[in-house]
Image (cartoon, rainbow, N blue to C red; front, top):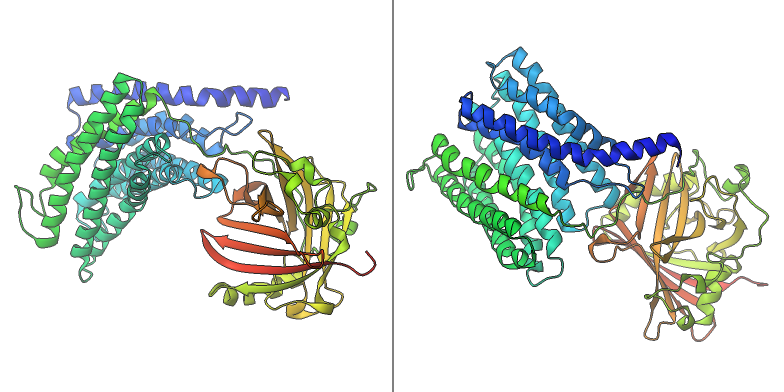
Length: 588
């Protein structure tokens, strides 16, 4: 590690401490504001979020890379928050107008940085597991609260009553931000426990609920048909989910905690938010029907702030955030910073890509894997793999591959648009029709001198481009190596693309009744805890795609050849399946 890198690492380690200090000092400042009586109840709640809750929430969501560094978005959010929060609070003392907007703008920018951090987390990891997606949602939603602050300070209410714009600031700093982040913390504590299903369902509703409720309020303001009824249904589902989630926390999480202060804070917060949701249901019903119930009507904004808003802020958000800060649960998801090859292509890849780039080497290589035995793990016994399957992986260049595709609707229709581009580029031209006989893919394996340590040392180039045209033409240029993480070996393959690359980190497992088949899978293990996945390198950074693939290679008992089934899914929905008949080429 260079001196500059070490300095960046040290300063990065201080960021969580900085966030903690900001929350403590912010709490002192907020108490002074409350005692001085500068603000009314709504402004007190908004100031609390800016000064205390946001630094605590961002601290809970801290996600260092494997080398200890942190996202630039996180750095901006943490370092900028104290001063930007002071300006945001100061804007609340000013009458609506240009000066108030300019003073509020830095806080809106800070919420944008928090949302950028949430997007970074999501793109690095993908939408798994649900508890981390909930944390991401809380980080992302807050930018709506920042935008609402600008409209409020400008005195622009659009189609809403002015008080609705002000309450939107509160909604997306608390129900939209703090609640999903806290749900994520609780979800980290009970993966696979007796309340796992309840946690999953209620967390999913908590993730989408704030956005749906906001949409419903907008629809009511625009006087859409049945909008009030739909808004009430959304509120009822959301509040019920929050109440059930709180029950699950009390019954399933609190017994797992060893700290009595933490139990007390989280238990009290869970009870408080359950009561608070009761007020929200009554208010939603009043808005839907126009009636008054338990003293709460469609215009009972002051009552809702007094009971629902203050209970959410002081009874739920503060104790829950402090409670989880006492002992932050570890994420079961993998840490960001997976090493990805920086190799990219130009407008054309093609089967001669490596030669044009002068990347070929002199080493003797013959297959995707040098030795299947090198991938042994607790999930993979290489001795059980059939000899024909082993030979295919160790001598991949000796084979011809006949392929039959099976596309699902509507992906086939979209692939018709994608296919000509892939054919022209000469890479990842997934077939639309069967390619057999003379049109089968032939391959060669060549040594590669990589551009970096993450680029593989061998390439398997498969193509029928010289024997086929148009929809029949296929080319795949994949660069392979063995990637080791936490003592486990994966097969890593990089496909250069125009200005980017697609990298697959594939877990190696046994398949078939006796383990004679070999399975390559990018599906994450429980909680997204391993490095398996499909990653797109673009703009110098990598994104974990919501795609997954499984390749099952099994022996053909009759001929000594092998068969393979390659399945690709998008968020659990099958996109296509390729079935391969793989035979030794003539003369091999």
